[in-house]
Length: 444
Image (cartoon, rainbow, N blue to C red):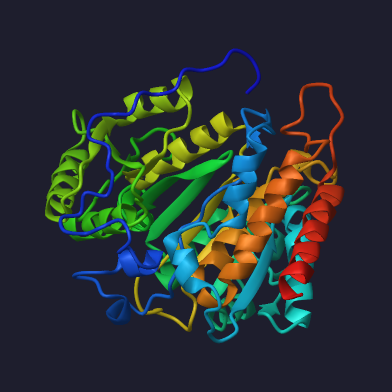
């Protein structure tokens, strides 16, 4: 956002500096260790380990921020977290990703990251399957939004890498709702928690943790449709157990500098009052401070002030809206990644998560070669960060993407109005070239 500078939000009373009782700042372990330490052990839940991701993009408010070079270089050269230090040289089985380009601009923004994955697969660094059909484009060609072959490929993969699901130019799905294919994936693999991260320039990302498959994201059985004359209704239900699991995941994303924000609408909704009670119970047990905000106040602060160094935990619909708002505040909807995870033993096959950009299919941009593929690269980075075998690849790709974002010209969504911009394919080539060069240097 070009224009007048926005004030920084004062450090809020109640923000967290890792006040877990009796724990020093060096005792965190890897992120997934932290997520499932205590009552939810990583062994019992069968979750792969993941390190805390840090963002080093040169983008803020729609333009580059190229000063503080020495600080930025130091940030990029050191491991992004204590977890990253422990994980260097970690070995594990080769992971497999199933690629689902999807609808609209999905195939366009996925082309660059997929080309990069093919090169890594040719070097035996990972396995790759696809592209597999999904969404409106799949319905147009096969009559199914989620064909059996796609579902089987996802079951046989460790993670799903998705482009977009939505409208498909030139095709009307009729009664078929294109989002049903994505919802089926969530239900089939029980992806019940969402983690979205918005880039904040050289600083750590704003992390938003929310529920899926509950609350506003319940199934069709909670909805009463209308014929246009009769009332419609949606049953909004949350359980204390699911809220506690969500909060537990969110608190483990904290480090010794950021704050925990819990966002609700407790002055109106019964579910929000339950939410606040559970959050207070969990944070009290963990010895953490938490700042409680109403959804409208949180939205105001995200727009009014710099994006905070915080982890936000909130209900699914609230988080969906806030993450898009925060991405806009960062400069583009493409500056946000999304991970849908199942915090436990895989329920079908071996798949543990779905990773994607947060933007939709953007049918108005299809074929114009102007969509920003950064969101797809961020989704890929989030996937690579999840597994021990590929965490170093994730770190290298994050640096390459940051360098590509800092270079001129910018993609059309970030470039200043009327100024020159770089198209989708050349930008992807810029990222991939930097990545492969860095990979060769790392291997030397």
